[in-house]
Amino acid sequence: MIPALRRYARALARDADIADDLVQDTLVRALRSERLFIGGDVRSWLYTILTNLNKNRRRSLARRPQFMPLLENNPDASGTEAEGRDIERALATLVEEQRAVLLLVMLEGLSYREVADIQGVPIGTVMSRLARARAHVKASLEGVRPALRRVK
Amino acid sequence: MTDPKIPVTEDELHAYVDNELPAERRGDVEAWLATHPEDAERVQSWRSMADALHARYDQVANEPVPKRLELERLMRQPRRWLYGTVAATFVAFMAGSGAGWIAHGATAAPSLIQSFTVDALDAHRLYVVEVRHPVEVPGSERAHLQQWLTKRCGWDVRAPELSATGLKLVGGRLLPGPTGPASFLMYESASGERFTVYTAKASTEATQMRYVAKDNEGAMFWADRGVGYVVSGGTDRERLAQVARLVYDQSEKNGT
Image: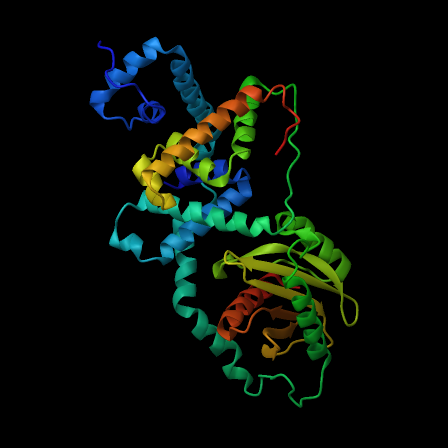
């Protein structure tokens, strides 16, 4: 479970240290809670905590100047690395809720129902977020070559 | 394979790719895709998107889990803080010091440490409300921040880890202190409450931990090995003591 949480956090926060901080905070919060011992769907619940913590983090970040790393364009990078950067860049252009839906469904393999519970929204909202996120990422991936300078 | 009676919707295409579609409808969608190349192309692009995501991020799941995320390790920490925090803090710092509480306006002769506690509170008030530029060096550059402040201040400035109390390092700055430079670190919780840790050279070697409240801010201050510490933030004394205790514990561990 922890490796999967780390994967999700990394894709969500796009920074290795912040991602592991999020996982750590998630685990600490979970351990402090009694719900773990009552039972229920622990997996979904951990994703919920992490998603909320990231939302809080971004909210507090929004009040401060942001430090955006300049994305380097290394022409010598291998195909897979370049592809990884492209998908990373495409994710970066998504709004928070859409990115979370996209990752929870496509990377973590959660059901629409589970994602709806995690985000506290109806399934219809999850589906429209997913559709918009996919359209956005698709456009971003296809446009990534001519629009190299568009760094968000 | 029969032609679908009802046209396939956008939602159904997504549900098809995500295995959320009722089994009896899958055949219809497959038939639809065979005759609608644009939809088929989109479905294909979503599948390659999923492949790209896995290609990029699955390696994270395959990395060894860092030590700080090991459950055994994490389980020991919160327990200690759950049951022992408040009691331990007050036993350690309050009971022993007897007349240690210095209220605002107390008649005790102002010592250097008290005067810089006022400096620290002023700095706290000045910067915690700052939205755009609360610090000079962001917490993401912790190592650099510590190195810089240590060099400028002349004692070992370490930014304590306060995540056990839900606080994260925002960053820090250098300030003019009463007798030279002072270091100023800011922390923030997920809900936006801010605490600051101020250190400056103190004339006394070591003192008890004390509490002072001024206007709407409280501070815990003490001196240790010639360095004075002031932890400021809010008026919740127990919460403040909890944070101060963590700072104290770590400064002791690190040495000066």
